Length: 240
Image (cartoon, rainbow, N blue to C red; front, side, top):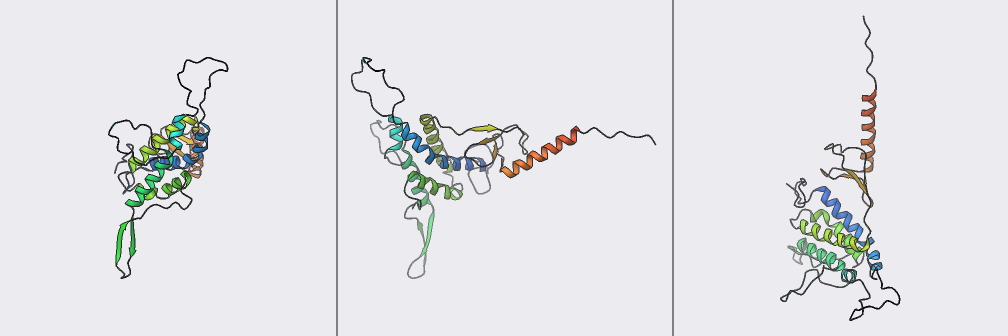
């Protein structure tokens, strides 16, 4: 089965390839760390020079509305908008808690009634054991990723969380550092292995192959041994 997010193949029984799944997991880990930086971005970056006369008819807004909208309350799904005047993204907490509630409803709960009959029905709701905060809901979504990747709506989750994290990075100017590795990918031979801060191991940007640190170290030793063997001069033949 092909990944519904990218052209790479997905694991049997899933709708997302391992690379896209790791990317989504990394975004969920990054979101709570971005929130304090987003709060710092509430104040506008530029202020008028002292004593400057402005022709503005009204006082400027004292906060960055883009950051305020993301930090404020909201609904996971946009309300009915018959007049077309609802704008802006879904706030962070509303988005992650809304997805948790949706996944909980999709994830069937199995129980037995007083007569011993098995009852299968949607879950009553999501419960964040680490608290109903942005961090708590991101942990909840991460825990349920193995289930989410088996559902066709995983593409929507990946798209919405990705759009949110990129919007936040634009406001906070905090982007994970990505370092390109020197060796080619052992799977496709492309020089596209990268290491991203906050993520485990290295990943090929071409084929999605992922190596944990121990696997990459073994790849380095294997490549070095191959190059060393190729550099050795061939033994001279001796006449009988």
